[in-house]
Length: 401
Image (tube, rainbow, N blue to C red; front, top):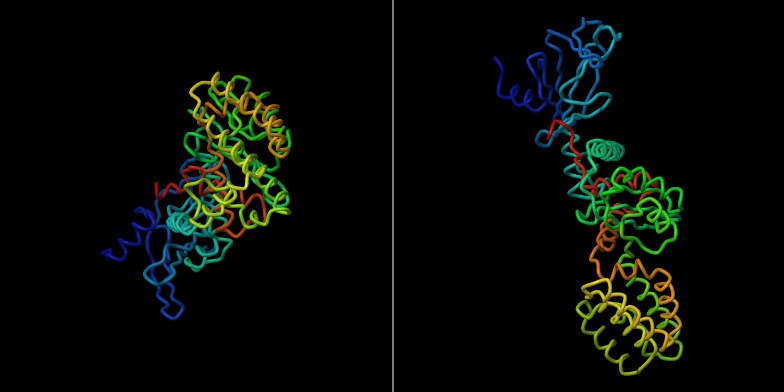
């Protein structure tokens, strides 16, 4: 008669009537439980052809890491039968694990949940009392499974952005509406970007309405060549970043003659709502000095105001007035940015009247992955981590679905 404990094990390992529990051993000193399983007889199904075959022999005993029981690590052991069929001799499938894995699907699913909570592979390995390589392998495996299951459809708005991975760059492609990363490609040269975009979104070229990117030449070239019907938008976040860079360059130039500008970087770059009381005092004091850095700051705020335009015609009108004002004041650092904006007038004006701007959110998410993971030594690891946490993929094995 089957005990309650046997029923728990059978349910946990998804055992059918063709599998039996031989014995369970507890080693309290080693804090582990070992469960021994064997095939109970009956039909043997070939995993390649699906036909019923005959018993050939049993493999040497294999072990799988299973979910912990209480404070004990748990391991499953079995000599899995091999079946003779028209395709030759093959090892039959076991219900608790995928082929060639050294852990059960239940353990894999729990590892995924724990990794999603900690966002750190080392901490997850410590909590599970397993090697880092086990967690890393599960991360890569779950991402590959999620990509295989994913069906790309209904994507209308895409964001293409760069991310520095010292000493090189990666290209991040995101679904702007859903806020999920679709893929991460190595490099940002035209050939690599073209291969990434076409391989990922080539079948959707007629569905994509807008593509948001910065002013990197390779991105613009690939977008206009591959998706001629899509509206090119230069991301608002990057436009403001360019102006922030100009403000800081003016500040660094003027601080040599004006000590009041020391330690004022964040007071000038932050929005009013985000300044501390001390930063607000510094900011107000600088405004009274009538320096070029204040003029540069005003141009940034005037540019932000254009975002409230309701039509492309209005955006173009006010953008032209903004360019004229910049030219009149002749703050060289701002003039350089304005000239760059002028060279990319269409994408800038599209940004002024479109709200597709997801770069900041995606950048923040990716930076969090990089920071919490304390950097990644290889591009493969970094890519998988980004898609694991922010790819919106179905990561779990069949067991837990």
